[in-house]
Figure 1 (cartoon, rainbow, N blue to C red):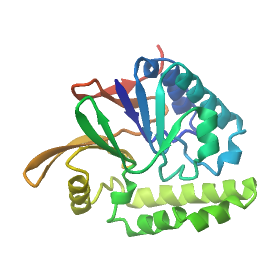
Figure 2: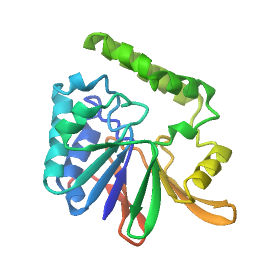
Figure 3: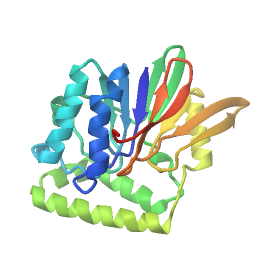
Length: 241
C-alpha cells in the first residue's frame, strides 16, 4: 500500500495540522509500505540549520520513528520548502526525490510532482519560482543569518497569500499538462500545490490519463491518497475522537 500527501504547510501557527500529521505518522501511515510527501510539508523552510527549532525537531523525530517502523518515506520539495536538504533528510530518515519522479508499482505507473512548474499562466509566480530555484540565489540566501532568513520567509508568505487572494483557484495550464503527460508515457499523474483536490480525466492522443490533485491540510482535517494495488482512493485524516 502506498500513501500520497502534500501541502501540509506545517508551522507553529498551525498546531492542529501539525497534531493531525503527527497522529497520522504514529498511526494510519504505519499500515502502509510507502509514504510520498509531494511538497510543502512545511509552511516555510529557511535551511537545514533550522532543524533544531523545537517544532521542526518534533516533526523530524516523528518522521524518523515512522521510518524506523518500516515505512519508506520519500519527500519532494515544494514551493514553500524548496531549501530542504540532505541534513534534514538524514535527521528525518526520509529520501529526497526529484520533481518529477516516475514511480512504478504493482504493474501501474505514476508520475509524481508538486505541480507548480505547470502553473504557467501565473507569470508572477513563475518568475518567483525561477528566482528561488536558482542555485546561486539559494546559496546567497543560506549565507544570511537565520533571523534575516526568517524575515525573508515571512515576507514571501505574505506576498504569496496576497497573490492567492488575487488569483484564487489557479490550476495547471492545460496545454503544458497535456505535454507533460505525453512526455511521461501517459502515466497517472499525482500532484499537489493548487489546493483544488479533484480527479481529472484527460484524453491525450486518444489515451485516457488520470490526474489526481491532492488536498491541502487544514487545522481540522487532512487527506491522503491511497494506492491499494488496484485503484486510487481518497481517505480523510481526522483528529482522534
